[in-house]
Image 1 (cartoon, one colour):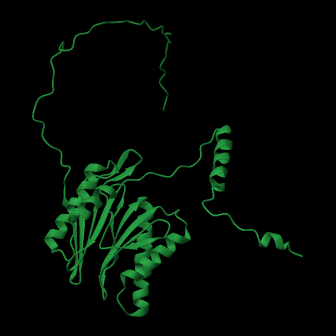
Image 2 (cartoon, helix red, strand yellow):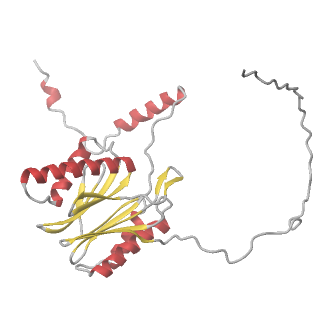
Image 3 (cartoon, rainbow, N blue to C red):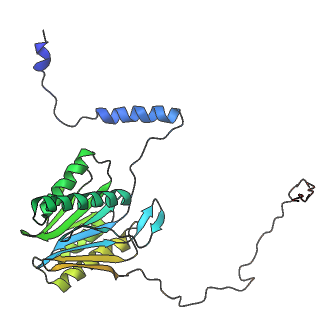
Length: 278
């Protein structure tokens, strides 16, 4: 017979830190054996999107980093999903690349099966279900934008599967700088030229305020008439020319002290022998 007292226990409210104590014990045991606990991987990107009068504009920088090393200066971060739907990827570049390719294939099969053009909400639902299935181990944050029968649509999807639907969105390590530009200047039903300048300025703010973002600004304008992918739309970090000469004559900096340390070396005699190849 089951113990009825266990069923009547009242669970305590608040947060539970059992896993935090467990992790501390595991890290201590690993350090004793000379191992290190895995850490979250820091990535750098600035991606953004906004809804304007006639459609959606997506923007991204083009710098791909590997820790503190710039791995690629001209990386494509705006990926194709469908003829009327594109996606910006932040986080692990390989994860963002493969998940957008898988979604593009799935959406094409879905369109052939139903005989109708894909919806942005369909793409968003499939992506968030896949990310939720892997519980955040697919390290990609995505901004999905497009135009369908319901008009312009813009969604952000986080690595754990949660999502938002807003008129303007930013993600990545430079998102704080980019969203400040949107919050200051965004207006509903903006014209194309003004909207492109706003997205360009938001990505540029992320490039200048975040070390993980850099190089060029890519834009993708999606309307009901088609898609205009503007690769290398802006180059805010072009190398300038030196205005002066920085060469100094020998002796400009005086030598205050000089110390010579003799090194004891063992002379090794070597003999070279030619090999008979005949």
